[in-house]
Length: 192
Picture 1 (cartoon, rainbow, N blue to C red):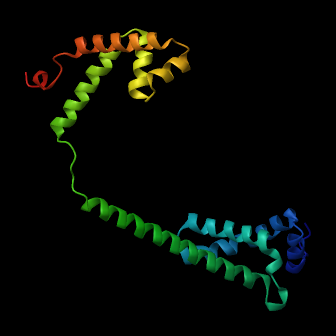
Picture 2 (picture 1 turned 90 degrees about the vertical axis):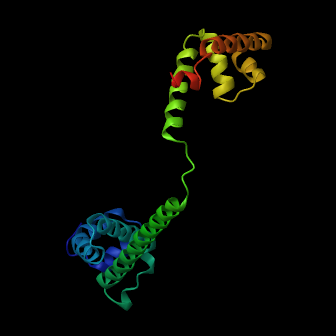
Picture 3 (picture 1 turned 60 degrees about the horizontal axis):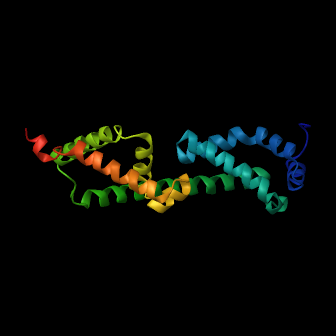
């Protein structure tokens, strides 16, 4: 694009959605706009965000610029200042919200399980997983669907094209095998 093109002509082209004009305007003013935004926000990423937001706004609302009220650069720096202040407010709001959430979490009493209970539950879970692996593939599938995925026996029957009686039989046999395998894995095992 011609370097002698005026800012007014650039804005007229941008109003007409000339992307090349916006690119030229960006290349012409990106560095001073970035430096201005950085002085306000004191953060390189936030300053870059302010620059991007400015040029997006210019693209979407270029028709709002009126050259009779001042130079394009004055309008751009005013928008950049407003955008930068908005970004700082959003950041401050996020920080305050995170602090408030952390304070709320700190006020909640810990009603969780003791370390012994957690270890016991993990140990029992490992025992159950080990016992599940001893079941046949068909039994594992129906137990998984019913007890871990929340399906009903009828839904398993329908989705797997297995007769309902077969599903019930597999579940009954699986539970019997699991009961035999897991007998004696309660607290008395941990206390030995």
